[in-house]
Length: 115
Length: 113
Image: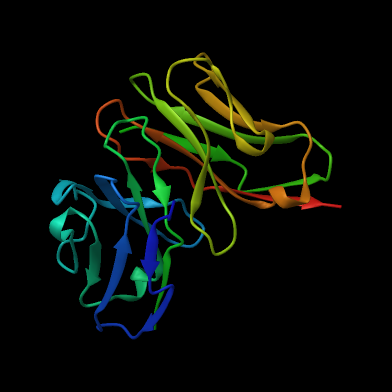
């Protein structure tokens, strides 16, 4: 079974530029998550989708971050414009449903460096 | 909101020694608790999870954790460390409804020969 795919794996941009990350969840998984992991910290949830609807985006900085999950499969996360503090690893995860005990499967992440 | 605290950002053990990684949770309701492992340049992999069934939970790679309500703890243990266990370990908690994982800051495990 293929895992969660993410691209690109690494991205370096200058502040005020824009960047987009792509995630392909495990086939059949209804729930998709984006997490931000700053160096030395645990992952922090940015947004959660159930199919193509947003369940929780309370911690998403909506003035610069946006995310979509068209057709309830792939998802993109965009940052525009980027700030220095956005340097982090962006992890995508998926689960079969949104049940509290469902296992979340994580992709390898995209490491973003903002200069 | 529920949260977890991982005591010790770095833990070093000798190969073959006991591994003990500490996690305490804060919750006003029975929590769901998880341990994840992250190897360098890889995503997180689930080691084990507590879902209010048995308090002693066995996971992959010989790890286990015990839920202790009186101590609000969910410490991760392994009887004998292996070099391949060197990684970052994260404790996480989720609420009963929905599934937003709140992670601790992580503990880096170093295994020395």
